Image 1 (cartoon, rainbow, N blue to C red):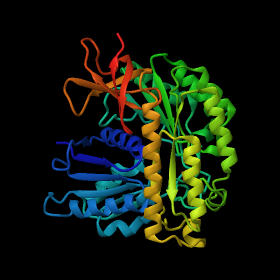
Image 2 (cartoon, rainbow, N blue to C red):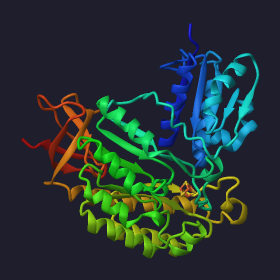
Image 3 (cartoon, rainbow, N blue to C red):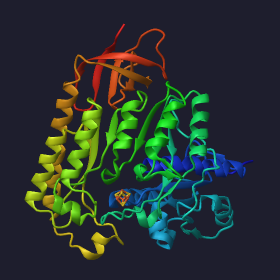
Image 4 (cartoon, rainbow, N blue to C red):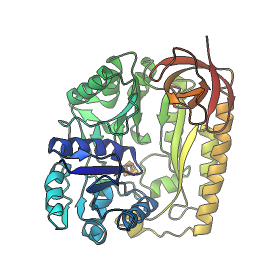
Amino acid sequence: MKTKVYIESYDCRMTVVYSQIVASILKKENYEIANSVEEATIVLLNTCAIRDNAEQKIFGRLNELRSRKYNNPTVGVIGCMAERLGEALFEKADIVAGPDVYRTLPNLIEQALSGGKVINTVLSNKEMYEDIEPVRLDSNGISAFVAIMRGCNNFCSYCVVPYTRGRERSRSVATILREVQTLIDSGYKEVTLLGQNVNSYCDGDVTFAKLIKQVAELSPELRVRFATSHPKDLSDELIEAMASMPNIAKAFHLPVQSGSNVMLKAMNRKYTVEWYMDRVNALRKAMPGCSITTDIIAGFCGETEDDHRATIELMKSVGYDYAFMFAYSQRPGTVAEQKMSDDVSKEDKIRRLNEIIDTQNLLSLHNNQADIGKKFTVLVEGRSKRSEKQLFGRTSQNKVVVFDKMEGVEKGDYVDVIVRSASSATLKGEIDM
Ligand code: SF4
């Protein structure tokens, strides 16, 4: 009988992608991928270390896995948190493996099953796993993530990624196109090209703008998305590529982090508010109706009320469609932790974060209401959670739309939907007949 491994992915789309790679490596070595913890001999937690609460969640899960509720599985922590904490995880975990050593997992598991604690956190500046075909765990059969690069060279002062994932390296164009073609042949209709900073993608003279065009040219039926971009690297070439291909989604995630130049400098973001607004205006000019989303940190080291107000003003100027918003938490080993003072009180961080969230909720509602009466091409993803009589899907702008079922319309189809009502999170509409 094959040994069963259950893999849980936490907090980041990159962990989802690399869990699929891990599943592929293990299956090749005769392991079976389990559908639940209960049926598994080994449980692997694929982790993100970017925020403190992501790590706290993992500690909670490790305690749970060690409780009587479960049948004492062999537990592994893999990914960024394993890289960052190393042997400190041995108190709760049997296997600790960093993001660049997944090929050694069968060996590590074998050793752990014979009773030892095992660790490998060696970083590589070459490992891309590009010869490994991912096993699409939990896939809806319509949308898939495709990793195109790994690592980051930017060293934003608050971020652990350059330390846990190592330096930037790009996959070859040929392996990316091959993987996407396989997905198309299997009926997938949407791919999201993933990397810590996709704008830095480079394979010979192929830039990210050239790559995304080549991917989109594989099939007009394929919708192409990407994440994440660094504003400093957002080129006119990429904007032109997006505008020129109808099947490249008109949605741009452009993490700003703060609306204050003083904070941007302290964060080592390498752009100014003026540069950022220039890029936003270029996107809007080339693609009117393109959605823009962002990430914002409230209460970074030294942030004053004026800096905070500048963030709120910038949010209003851009009119973001959506934002991922967080209160700053120190990450060990980063420049901010070692050289700056985490001097904004917890109360102020929470208040500022709430003001940012309230601002974004109003902006999202306003933008969604502006869609009422408009027609969008929606890729159907499945049945609505609330009603069997309804379907849901996404617009090119990545907005969720719910609409009544219609005979002959199925998951994976594109349909034109006219929006009839909107909340800050969802659009409701009807199929245009
Ligand atoms: S660009 Fe900055 S925030 Fe993004 S992964 Fe790199 S260091 Fe972290």
